[in-house]
Image (cartoon, helix red, strand yellow):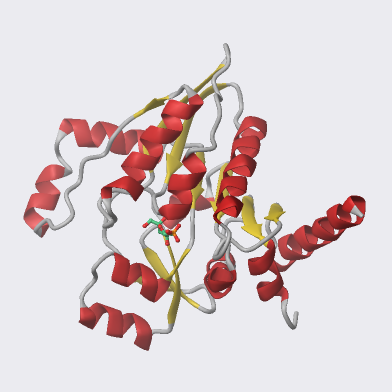
Length: 258
Ligand code: F6P
């Protein structure tokens, strides 16, 4: 029956939250590797979580990019009230993605759907160290960076390490080094091995993992059987207040043999 299905999912959510020692897990039925509509359902859950968790007052919501986040953004509904105002910013700048799935684009789309505001962080991809430091002194960039550092909410995804390295056009050498260090997961521009230890950082501006540890609202969204290892690795050291939104296929694969 439907009721049994619900309780079954409830058990799975509790098990997963207990395994990762995080506040909450929400699981959508299906496998997002094969069914695109599952990612739309992630979006609806993220929307509900934001509706519930964002306090009154001024919120700054930092978001990451990627294909999951781009689809999630399409499902956000108005989050503004008389008392609640929301500003969306990219969590990090220039970590290398196609325009449509960059954090800037995801943040702009979320803001439009949420009836909130957004700010863009312009950081070109291939910059010399010098140009990079000069850019960081620009008042407009400094201003947006300060807002990012004040974010009280972050919405992000988790990817597979080598897949992400290739998608971002990291060099052959760098990819070999990632493999030697057994990198399996990527999030926020950091690469993690199976124990959740950081094995590589992409030196870019924006939120650091330390900032995220202290953030009141942390929503992680990633699913599909193919991401089970990546999710497990990242979640080992994820902030305890994290809510993980995932799917049944990933959850079952993660809990296999546990
Ligand atoms: O590059 C941004 C990012 O959020 C990464 O941190 C993450 O690994 C990846 O995108 C996830 O991408 P996708 O949703 O396409 O799997």
